[in-house]
Amino acid sequence: MNNNTNNNSIRFPIWLWISLFLFLVIWFYMLGARTLVPTDEGRYAEMAREMVATGDWITPRLNAIKYFEKPPLQTWMNALTFSAFGLGEWQARLWTGLSALFGIFLVGYTGTRIANKPVGITAAAVLGSSFWWAGLGHVNSLDMGLSGMMTLALCGLLLAQRDQATKTEQRNGMLLCWLGMALATMSKGPMGIILPGAVLFLYTFAARDWRIWQRLHLVKGLLLFFAITTPWFVLVSRDNPEFLHFFFIHEHWERFTSKVHHRDGPLYYFIPLLIVGIFPWLGLLVQSMWNGTKQQAATFQAGKLLLIWALFIFFFFSISSSKLPSYILPIFPALALLIAMHLERPAYRGIVITSAMLSLFGLIGLGFWLFFGQIPSLNKNTYDLPLYIAYLPYIAIASGLMLIGGIKAWYLARTKQQVAIWVLAWAGFLSGQILMMGHEPWGRYIAGTEHLAAIQAELKPETSIYAVGRYEQSLPFYLRHTTILVEHPDEMEFGLQYEPQLWIPKREDFVKQWLDHQANGVAALAIIRPDIYDAFVQQGIPMRVIAQDPRRVIVSSKLN
Image (cartoon, rainbow, N blue to C red; front, top):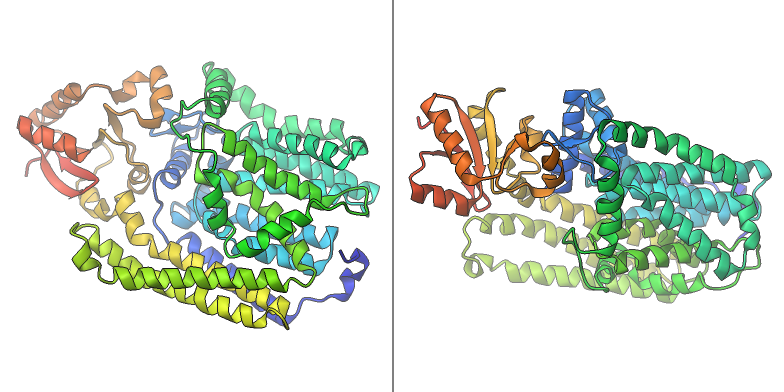
């Protein structure tokens, strides 16, 4: 690993500034390029919209119902964005987009400080082009906000504990680490401090670095942590006595130890997600992680800490009874730094393997495109058919980029390793963003936004909208209007125990209310699950269909 004293002799060439500018243009453009897709994107956008509309910044609500599953940092940030810039897709994704971007630049800066500028630049390029990080940086979900803050904790620890750190840098770095853990806790709960704390314990034993505990600034750090996290927990518990048991026992302890949330999966659940998520750098992953095990001639062993961070968090969520694809996001900054440290040395074989894998993915994608070009004769679902066809050109373009990028990087690997790395990074980043862009027709279908014009033509501020047998996560945000749940409480079951007047538990009670609307000439709308709509038709319940698709039927109480 090169010494930091060489840093000042390395300047940023003009091509790097141009590359950064183009990257940022694409990054910010993509924040608003797609519809907010259920469930997470619609949910968290709607929670922030309701926060702005009600002015209640203490008790989070979804569909006007108390919603205590997670702390409010992201809802606050989205609400501030909506207050400043209005409602929209890019506004809803701005916090997660900035969190991911913050992680990329922070990893780059940290790589520069613990190694040198080439390592820092490469680490930023690896993280920024990794499919999972770049992709979920453009999705309005809590896990990227959490990961950005956990990256601050990781990098603060690395900056503080490196052997070259002065006393002031050590203190400031640790305060950044504590700040990161506090903000991570306010993003998604106790995991924000439990995971980094566990990593620190494991590192202490693995590296036999007992003196690190004297360099953590525990008193100042804990004061900072509790100053940030305590006020909201006190205020929300004061206003909602039911909060503490639900949040800490049901939502966190039971989520990890039981299958109460119905999100279980096999022990290997995250392995294929890691393979896809680290793309296009898969060919360098194993050797980079192996290098992290090697003893370093230093008091603080950064590689070992990074390896433990990645392995423990991956293991922790693998044994959890609750699994979602985005849970392993926090490991990618550590992997990016490990890969960059490996690429500081000649890595011809690893780059060739990586290039070959990228080209192979491209060939598979092109084969998929050619095969499913015959889809009109293979698929009989007339509604899905145009969506498949619309996706095919994006698959072809992304696959072509992978194939060409892989071949070019392979060609450059021996003589121009750094250029080959940038070819891989751009090929991976662009192909991932193109595939996400191609998903937009599917996103509109899943969100139901194709029907906005039909609904808005019937909708007035006082109009009741019923959600019968299903809850639409995105439509309330686009309609600026909450719904009345019928029969299906969805994830709002806990809140409805304390506010039962906000929903209709029985289908027959909805039918009675619907008929009352018609008898009194009151306009109402209902978004109905198709099988329930068919049952209503069989019962002869009067409804006028204003829009429908295979997922939903939207009806009005006004028959003409």
